[in-house]
Image (cartoon, rainbow, N blue to C red; front, side):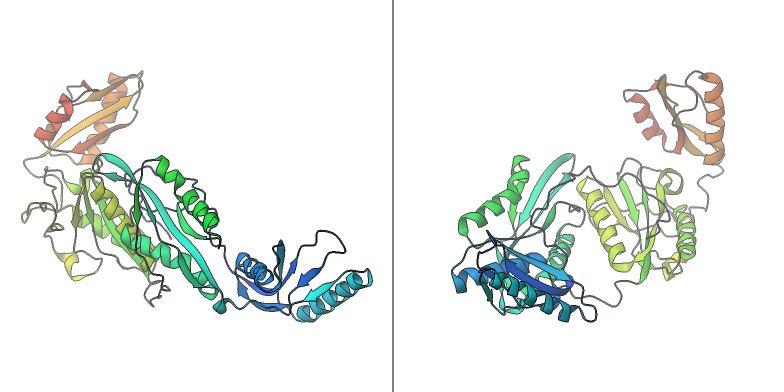
Length: 432
């Protein structure tokens, strides 16, 4: 996925490097063979036939061990190996095994050819699926741990289980879940061992005083859609304090050039909008478009950011705008998402953030030598000119500190006064 513009400030710090012991490994395609592990050269060897298929090796091994226990009364270690199925390999493996068996028998040992092959549809295997997250609830950081009861399913479906669980969590809380803290673990048959695995999965989250949430989830394979991979984009604008987030639907954009064109059109559209505090969105917000990327992934990315902003106490404004769409030509601002006050109508707004009366601005400079903030002032100049003038002033007035993190933003006199009254800044009486 190519990111047209990076929008900073989304989400909260999350846990990382969470172990996923027992996670379902990827299935591999090839020719398989299983055997018991001999304690000494003369110990009885149990061997399967060579069989082909796409399997999870741990399940093949588990199933062969279960066969030896139920049919032959043995609790022994087993190993299973896989070779790529190229022409002549099966015949070579069969011949090599027979020569090996003959050597064991000639040396006084015993070989039991079980003629077993793995049939996953006939094997029931139990799993537990789980997912943990740290997320924001207003200004508080909280932890939540989701888990299922043991899920019994045919071995032939195991490769779909992790995908289905990930999709479920993504629909439940797309902005909470993150890679490394979710998965599905195969459970032992022994009740005590099974509970030990379940407790181990939850232990980290209990230590964080997480809310433990049991979900009544039923596995069903994920159904792919023909539109999932259609190249798509969505556009957004985030206020630097994360208070307001304007976001469009996901819409089609096949190339990076189309994504760039959409971003330029989106930023032009934003010039018609002031937020409820009077900030001009085009000048004051971090804006851009994400994509192009597969439509399914872009929708999930958008949903995740939506939830992160809302749970952090921000206001989300759904903007009915798409590049080249019917709403693209409209100068009307968004109507809000129904859960917070919408941006006030700006029917008379112009394509510029300034007017004959001027726009209120405030400038700041943060440095190791001091942090400075101007009062609010009114100017008819554009924002880029004001920033350049402010930086030139700082170079002369504070040569020791230099221009470090200096910036200006469109604001209101009320907001500028509130910022100046806050701690940490020294008043700098400058206006452009």
